[in-house]
Image (cartoon, rainbow, N blue to C red; front, side, top):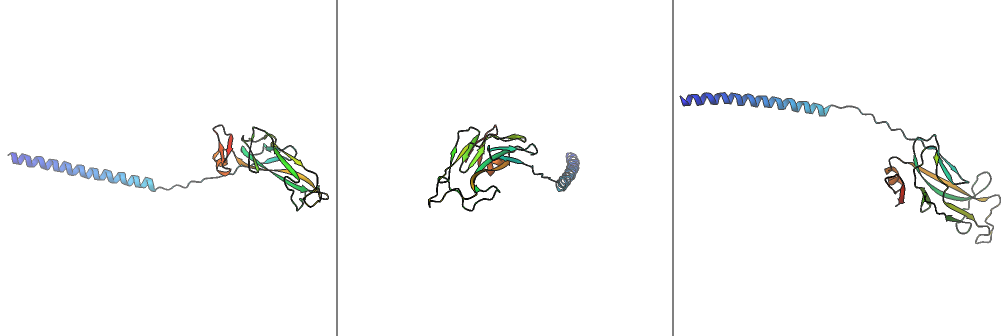
Length: 194
């Protein structure tokens, strides 16, 4: 009798185990199918990129650069001085003036600008409708003659200084850090050009 009871008990447990295994297999199959279906669904994503518009105005008399109110973004600005012989029509003479002989450049102390090589970097971002301070440099023309005794004032041409300004968006600051190799602090100020 014990053997018979034990056999019935095993048969009932075997059916329950078999039913549990079938139910577990079915549940896992449904879950796996749902997961695969979820991962396979494709959806088109459109990433639109609209470049910002920057409009700079350079005052070649004062050395102030203005980010127009029509600009879309704030910018960091750097400036390079270009010295040429130029006539009244804006034509540039084919012989370039030589620093030290025809003119000298003196940097002035200004906490808003950093000089690195031939460029002057404005530390602060310049928002639309605002301007930099004057580029901290003085160019002095040296009258006289060149090494061959010729006058350095060519007929109809005079020495002129132009400010060649470049701008890069100020947000994110990684744009200026990567493009100009600049260090920008947590306040958004350029602290160093590396």
